[in-house]
Image (cartoon, rainbow, N blue to C red; front, top):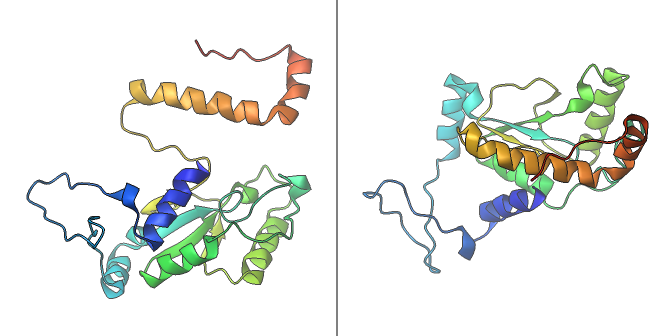
Length: 198
């Protein structure tokens, strides 16, 4: 999933030979750059800000914290946020989104009731973001209406459960396989999990 995010961020900052795409409307004739890539239409910052006044959710972006901004190399670690540098280009990407007129909210499960001290988590995240000079509106665990949600564990639903469920199942078992250390005690205690892949 991080490769998809990197590719997306690369599209924001640079010309990308792999990123050319055609419009679904045959009458569109987008201008092309010197490399022949289609230049996507963009909206001036004032237009985006004006849209946000009427419909805030159309300019709101929710970005996950762990493994999206913060590296999260030591995992949950009793809720302690390690003092490590942000994921490369995450600050620049957020600054760029602000320059376009969008507003970023940090969206994290760290503030859910399942965690021991929500206030402590909020303060740790705020201090970490402020230390690395990130722009953000607020930190929340609530899924606020937004134009896009950026998360290392997201899956874009196509509208077709019959098609998507096979991909979802693959992702689930791949994720479980990556978390062997967490799962081994469960397997020993219960006798295992049925994979279900055929």
